[in-house]
Image: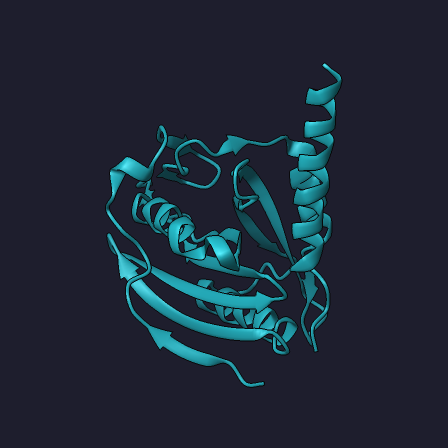
Amino acid sequence: MKKNKVKVINKILLITALVLLFSCKSGDESDWFSGDFYSNDKTKLSSEIVDEILNCKFNPPINWSFQSAELSRKIESKNRFQDSGQKIFTYLPLYLFFNDSTGSLLSVGLVETTDSSATVESKMNNYRNLLSNKYRNDKLSMGSFTKSGIKFTQLRSEKETFVNYKILFTNSLNKLIQIDCTIRKEDLKTELDFLKATIGSIQLIKK
């Protein structure tokens, strides 16, 4: 019992550290890259999740444990951005998954803004620019690809011994969706297979 409690506490501390690591203010120009960042490997996937708020369905990585909403709220509090026009963008994670064996963390959620008049394209561009500016002192790369008729924008940043991926797309209700994944560099080769499979599983729910 005591051992399990310590294990849970250690997991919470690790997840919190990952959240803080890629939420700190960073102070080089971004490199653009191209290429399809997904796979169709269903052996890397768990059961499908259908979410009407996200207006899409996807499969999380197999054997990654689902985490509590409390941890999601910690991520939310560290992911508020304000542009030059005082418009606020907030990432609201709805799902959080954790790989107990490697410490990799994956979240999926909405990006909301206080700018009600913004178009879909302007929301995407403004948010991408805010992220690019925030992580400009990290080793940052950005790019885009298309899968199943969905256009994805990808941001990859490196900090210390971790790599973070942010995958952005809009659903059929014109809401901005973010997939956020942090992986240790030493586990990158194997963990990317799971992340790419999850991205490859994404499908929009038609209106």
